[in-house]
Image 1 (cartoon, rainbow, N blue to C red):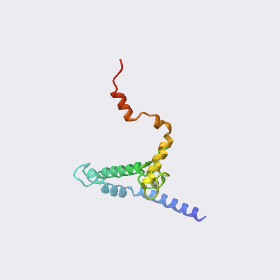
Image 2: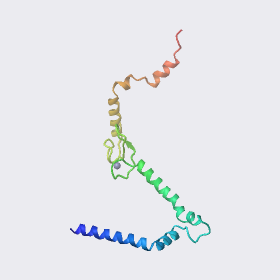
Image 3: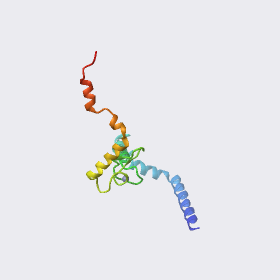
Length: 146
Ligand SMILES: [Zn+2]
C-alpha cells in the first residue's frame, strides 16, 4: 500500500515537472544553451566545440578505458582482476583466484611441474610419436638416395 502511494506520488511529481517544462520551456532552453556553450559566443559552433563538444573526446576516452578493462578482466561475474589464465575448453579467461588449476598464493615449482606432467599425460602417445626437432634436422641433413 505504501509502495503504491509512493509510486503514485512520484508519477504525479513527474507529470507536474513535464507540465512545468512545457509551460516555462524558454527558461530551460536558455539555461541549456548557456551550459552547452551555444549562446553568447563569437561564432555559431565556437561555444559548442570549446564547451560541451570538447567533452565528446573525453567521453570517448572513458568508453575506451571501460572497453579495455572489460576485455582483459576476469570473466567471473563482478571480478575486477586481470584474467591471465584461459580456461581450457571454454572461451573464458580467469584470474588466479578463480581459475581452478592455479594454486592460491602463487605457484611453486612443484605445482608447475605437476601441471606439466599432467599435460604430458593428457597428450599421451601423441607427444612421444611426434617427430622431435632433433629427428627432423637429422632427416633434413641426410643425403637423398638416388
Ligand atoms: Zn576473477
